[in-house]
Image 1 (cartoon, rainbow, N blue to C red):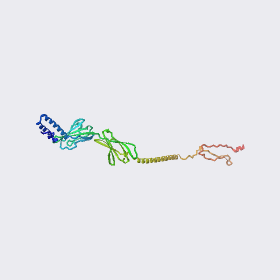
Image 2: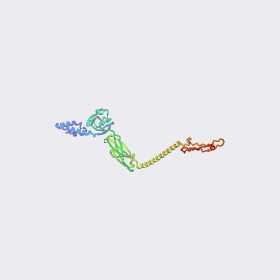
Image 3: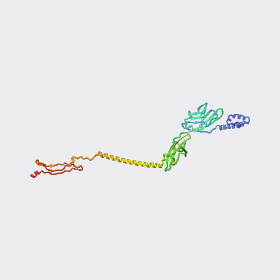
Image 4: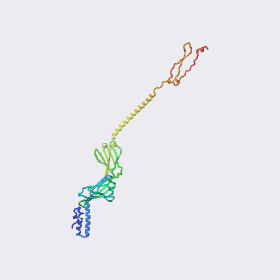
Amino acid sequence: MLTVTEVCRDRLLCEARLLPVMFLCQGRANDSQNNQIAADSLKLIWALKKLASQVRPIQVYGLITQSVSLSPTKHLAHPVEEVLWHYISNGTRHRLADFRNQQLSIRHSQFSHRLEADNNGTRLWIRELRSEDTGSYIAFITLQGTTQTIDLTFNLTVYEPVPSPDIKMEMEQNTSDWCNFTLLCSGPTNPSALSYSWMYRHKEQYQPYTNGTTIRVSLQPESWDGEYLCFIHNPADHKNVSITPREFCPDIRRTKVINDSRKHYILLIILLLALLLLSIAWYVRAMKKRKKGPPSTVIDPLNEVQYIEIHTCQSDKNLKTIYSLEQKPASPRETRAQTIYTELQNVHRTSQE
């Protein structure tokens, strides 16, 4: 009696030899036994077929608006006759596309004008990815000259591009030997959908740092020239940003010298400004005096006192001076003119009378 195990030593030939086995079994047992053998044979064949052709699902990641390819990770031993592609989304299975005679026929309207195939249909390209393209894709590959079908499953997840991150720094109390600060790396989108990691680079050497959005750092001056890099990423994309401690950890000792020098420069500038202001004030005052000129020495004739000499009127005798005063200009310091009064008499008339 031939058994299924003897006929199916080669698991890939089990399905092709199923009918002969059933006929061999039919003449050697009753109908109920034949039915049971046939059922067991079918179960065994499908189990062997599944073990022979099943491959672990291949994880694929893509970015919105970009392209992604679904292809086998290993070379196929036989030429391909046809490939049937199916798409599973939210538990619903859809017929996606068929590849026969070197032509691809798209069966799902969601993917119209967005699918391409090469490598005899075993590699499928999806263009202009959308978030709703996330799901499972199954390729049923039929090889030429055999009844074997290879099933390949691809789990596609479509992500949004990672935004550019930003690093914020918070200074803590510093000393001359230590610089203490906190770095916070963040993005404009929900951080729960992204992963964060840090790396420290110093003198072309990279050292992984603590993962997470926030790190606390204490550095000595010899390490201030290093660089901290924050990586923000999802499975399909990543970006990074860096910051150098030297930007916000100035040398305390050097800063003190610089500050002292600045103080001296400030004092010198103030002194020069004061001298400049004094020079300007002196110059303005001198110009005002020059415009005003020396005090006026012109004598006002109204304020001047007039002096005259009085003589007797005798025609045959020399004039005799009765009263005389020296004529002098009025002093500019005298505030008012002085008037002198005198009484004049005719000497001759008095003697005759």
